[in-house]
Length: 148
Image 1 (cartoon, helix red, strand yellow):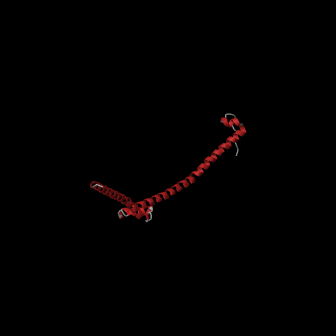
Image 2 (cartoon, rainbow, N blue to C red):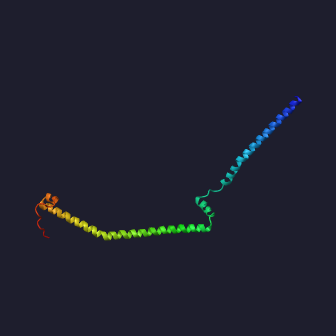
Image 3 (tube, helix red, strand yellow):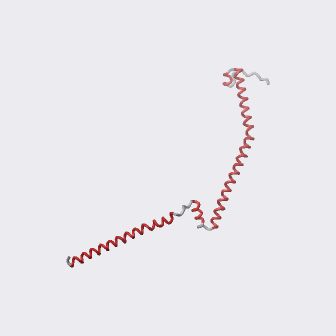
């Protein structure tokens, strides 16, 4: 080996070692970057999952007490107001329907009775004078007086 070749071989060896060290440094950096989120995930993996109610309860701490109490008061009063309105409307409907039945039932029965009497008169007239006279309106012979 010539003295110039020795320097070249030494430089090749040094450059390959430098490349290896750079490559290993990049690998370590990549591995370190990839393992950090995995480590964070592993830290939270052993904790139990929060339920929706726990999350909502945790969110209440970010609002002041006065706002929370005002919201609670508004929601409870709204709920009780709706329940009261529902009860009142049920009572009003019951009073209206029952009063209507009591007031209008006799009227409906009387109208039905009057219609039945008219039908019976029409049938009697048809039997006495024939089928054409009941339909034509009685233009034939006058009806004999009925005795009761």
